[in-house]
Length: 566
Image (cartoon, rainbow, N blue to C red; front, side, top):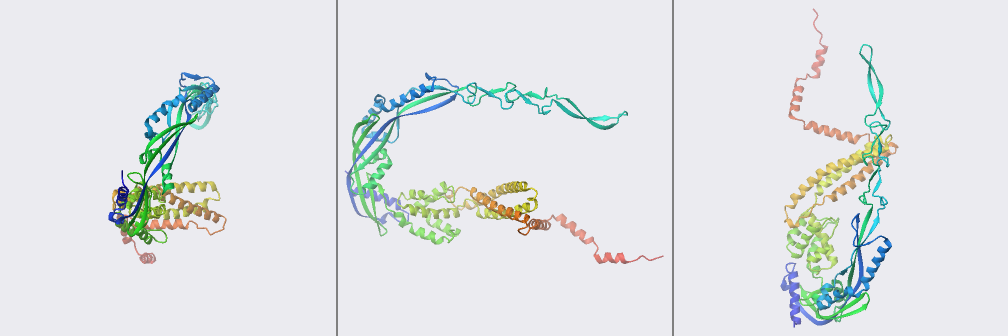
């Protein structure tokens, strides 16, 4: 039989392995006191018997051997089978015999419902509600007539042609309009292409069968529920809460059940009771001059009341992150890389950052549960959430998901463009075409935003790939360009709305008009840039033209000089 000292040594070894490398060494964990006991556990499993059914609905289809013509008989058969599933003891006897034969091992089968009998399926024909059982519907294209209006003559039966007229010399002197019988139809109607002239088409829901075959399968199911209690002297509530949450298979693995009894408590219920025992350990230990207490049960010990060791071990990391964070909540890139290099060697933080890089899908998503898993539960939820929020900031700096500079510049350009375009269009055209102005502005800006955003998306992706080359692959986050795309679109929408409101206000003479000044200024700047960066050949031509052009005073002198008279 295992001793208290052996249980204590096993549990402390687990703790040493967890804290090793996380600001602590295995030798830092030292035992203080330990207490153990053997507790008894009583587990009860109630099996509730009931019937369940599922239907399949097929267009047309073949009936089962047991087929009903009326819905009343169909439902009556259903209720009969459901009643038998609950109360017919002979159906469940084989299932109960198997549980009894397994003895305490049957707890492994008591976590999920069990289907122990299947009744013979039966069927019913259901008339299609779309066609009323005919299998055909009136053609919607021709209304059931089988004929459609001719598109060549518009239903008139005649077409009009322009004919050139000639005089008696054969010269064209004008035109006249003549009508002729339409060559495509007879009387303005043509055969309907949808129904080929029949006026009826096959019913789509029932595929032309006119009915559906409903096949019903009924099963007898046993649904388990369990409850476990103990006579533990310490941490009893926490222990029972864990056992009642984890399931019967977990209980069977952790507690040595050796007795089982069976009781039939109702026509539709039976009960299995299990009794067993296990070890319970209370361990006090110290780590870096701080005292902790942990509770575990079973062999090997399974901790169920865990001290928040990592709240103290990661206090330096949290203090560093708080100090490195600005009042606005931002972390300097240099500080982020300093933290990454300095602390990423710790197993818990390393695993947590890898999980963040792998599973994080949004900037605001805080994966505190990943840090709790990395710390094996020896950290408080509050500490895990707070530290994870800082780790998100670190990961966004060392492994960016998009280029904030590129998207930021695009947001500024897009907002300015939205204001200018919306204001100018509303100022010029809103008075005589309000709806056209609104639609035109929206379509223009959305198309321009979509096209330019594709380029920005590519540039941002290149920048991210270059930045992520500095860190190992397992720490690289997935790109999330949708976030800045949506944010920039929102900024553009607000800017466009502002420009539209201002443009409308100018039409009412509430505010001064811009008179296309921003647009003209932009055009002038672009023209100036074109002049500065014109091709070399154009510069040479301009220079030659400039060299051969006479000065203004020489031209004036030539005009004022009179020729000598002879």
